Image 1 (cartoon, rainbow, N blue to C red):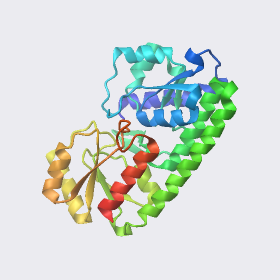
Image 2 (cartoon, one colour):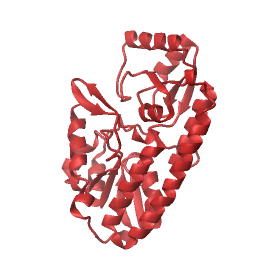
Image 3 (cartoon, helix red, strand yellow):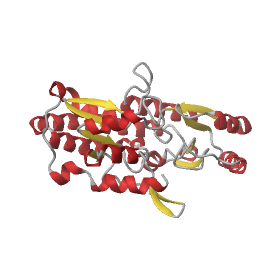
Length: 302
């Protein structure tokens, strides 16, 4: 979210090449379109739309935080060989910039968050955006449209199937949104206050009537180190607002959160926000991840 972020985001905005250039129609191994998704969450949504016609490879394995990911030399080779690169966008994937340059792959990039009304803020005097767009299911309706358009442009023979799959998945997202609203009603409005490891809840709070009152890192990234004074200030906020719990992602070191919990007496709740779980976990796909998270939030705050 710092210097490289503005450049990578401008690359994303300017190279959504399927809509600008009409796409490509190239042969693929086993008759499937070969694509890469940056995160497990993006990969899941792409797979829901591409299904049997698309082979999705995930750049970041499950349990890896995109804010702190260190790319490997083989990642550049993978980007060079793939046909489409789907990124969450909105500045999340700072690590992509050198990979795109080394693989000459920027023209393959699709920013799935393109078109979402982003939450913006100033960081070191520069305007930046909250990248956690997936935390509100209605934002994923935009993802779905962008993914279906990119797949259809690259593989027009199956465009009708991609569109049908997109419409089916969009129904699931709308159902999820309705379910979340019904669950949130169990929390008294005055108790809808969120504290997390970093500022991951902006879109969720905007959509469902919460206030994001504080974070441990004081940042939109997990890759930040708060001072003792900043942690003390957060503890004061927690106590003054009567916050019931701190929500920490499963990929995040919980040492600082444990300290805050010890000092304030609030609950520490683990959620999934940067990555899906493995196939045997409680967040093996996006829909289950959000249901798990919302259930945890409601149980902790109602």
